Length: 48
Image 1: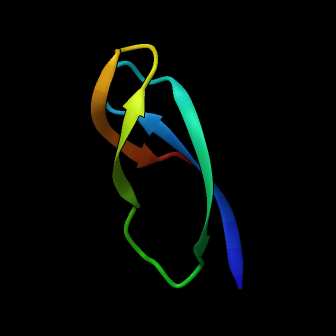
Image 2: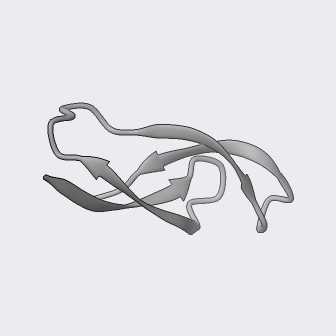
């Protein structure tokens, strides 16, 4: 079963991306994505 999650920038906190992930993960997903607010590639972490 999949779950829709929202990714937020670690630097500025803006919520830029949403994706679908498997629900079996226990830790938060973290990906390196481009943030338009910061203007650079930063880590984006799964929010609640």
